[in-house]
Length: 216
Picture 1 (cartoon, one colour):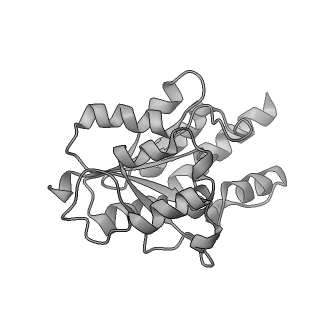
Picture 2 (cartoon, helix red, strand yellow):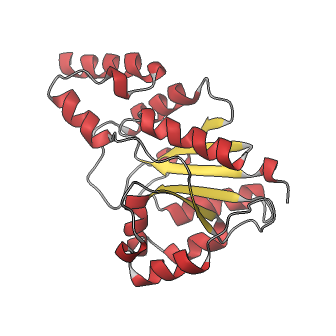
């Protein structure tokens, strides 16, 4: 398998996309030597309240954030999908497009791994992609649901140059930054400065949108 043709998949609400998201996407690309990493903002998330920002705004901000980063691509498939967006459906779509032999690497956070057993058809994720987990300090497998812990313990892999297109788990070496979209939204609502938490290309369009919204 040619690792250079492998594709990373990084989905999320991106409400809004921030420096932590971009840092993880670049780390996924660089650590695994991926040809492409697709950032996929979700349309209608099934596990949380409606996003703070409209879908098209979140997509536009992701597009702006990745514009100057080689190999990072904004993917609008979930924004364009009607109804709830499930990761397993998205991976199936991508797998159909890229074929059975192209390696896919799904990046999720440690918090998402703790909830993985609640995801729709979560076991099927391993038939479609490898799982790459960005864990924070203090992460422990004892906190995982037993069925997820079994997958974690039996599917660990370090050498991604000699493996199939899907089915294993590894952690991302780069730890996530201590920044969250929840924190940014709270600061925005309190009229606090968030410029240091946003990619430079995102700051102006986000502030322009919020200003226009207030004056409507």
